[in-house]
Image (cartoon, rainbow, N blue to C red; front, side):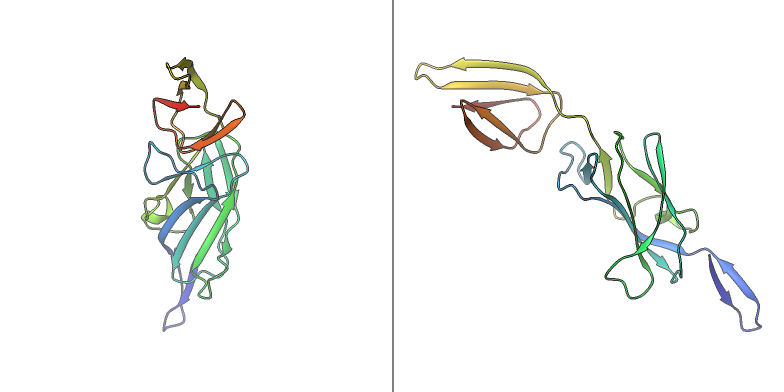
Length: 178
C-alpha cells in the first residue's frame, strides 16, 4: 500500500500498479512444444520480476504456485535498481506443473496476476524415457540406433560403442550411425 498526503493534509492509501511482470527460470532449457516457455527442474531458481508504479518502500510477499504447491515468497529490490520500483521474488519447486502462476495481492493491474511480457515457466522433474529402441546394420557394417522418446528434448547425449554424440533431439524417431 502506498500512502500519499493530499494538499489538505489527508492521507490516501492506494495500491501500486504492477507493470512489466515476467517469470524466469535459471535453467537455460526452453520448452520445444511451447514457444516462450522456460523449463525448470528441482533446484532451479524460478523468479518473478516486476516493476511498481509508484515506488514501494517495503513490499509484502508475493505468492508463487506450481500445481498444488503454493509458496509465500519475499520480495527483494533488484541489484541494479536505484529507484525502488524494480523487484524480484525467487524460489524453487520440486514438483511438476504445467505453468507456474503468481499473485501480487498488494497491487493492482494485469501484471499483478499475469505476465505482461509473455514469459512463462513450466516445471518438469520427470526424465524423458525411451519408448522404442531398435538397432540395424547396413551392408557396409554401420550400425544405426533408431529410438523414440516419450517427449521431445532440446539436447542430449548418446553413448554408443564407447563414443559420445551430443545432438538435438526432435519429436519422433532419431537415428545415430556409428
